[in-house]
Image (cartoon, rainbow, N blue to C red; front, side, top):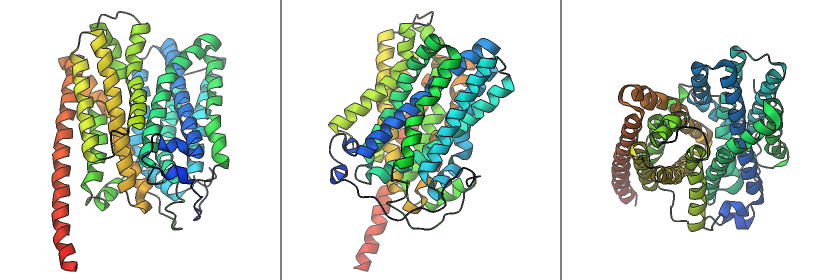
Length: 444
């Protein structure tokens, strides 16, 4: 499979020279001082925007043509379940092969799906089974892209500047999520669904082409020259056992997964009913503001964190930000004031970006270099794949107790879980320090 994709088997062992300015981890927007990182983040933002443009156009056509709630539900499932099932295997691919090639394969999959949508729209030949296949391929592309994308950040900027790079990468992805619906709607209205989705193919090209000439592979800083074996789904538990002596790493994987399980992607599909509770009876500017508020908060939060440096990567910071995030969602679910709801969603976006970017940073920094892709894959399996479960914790529960209460109780549960993880990590770290102290004393 990988040979057919042209993924190189050999990983070079000579690292490129990193500009001295890129090593300034404490500087504001430190990652942007690295020219390669600037373009990488820009290309990532464009690709994330194209991803969301495709959602806008394809979901609209699917609704107009089939009026199928089941198909709409499958669109959400197919987007996240590949992360649950394949993230560990794709993390193994990122460990094993040149990450540039892995990302390019994912980008080609994205472009192929957009081009195929355009063909079916043009010929008016789209059937449900066509849509199911395209939605699955799109979800697979996202799961393949994510681990390799994160390994590239570490390779480009190095360990010192990684927190800035991860935070800015999350910000650029949030900016893509924020801009995608607006540009997608403009393409749909201005060019129509067929030409709009074909234009979307071009938006993936800058990152895809630039990866041909960039010198980084995702492994140059940690290269060992050892060819690593492929992974299977069951290997996720093996990886967790291998890093079980690091409570912070385990806590970050758990925090990402539980946050996705209890809230995850549940707010978007429920937003029409939530908006109705705020007195918004039809789609328009105020409804669009609710949809965009979370992403806008994430972008704003990323810029604030980078410009002030007020949060350092630590398990305590990630968990406290998750507590703030969950309490904001509780307030939003129970609010009947539009201004208050809008403000809470913005604050939720800010705190969620802070929590997830810190967690991603710690996962990369604490993972053993020869297992970094695998550990990142396990984290993505947890934080991405379990988003599909939020349809149960919020959606199914909402059918029995009401959507407002199901969201509030799910968010409150996440708050309690984050506090429990905070206590667990603090105690486990303290025990580890006490255990290591006598051994150091006897060694001396």
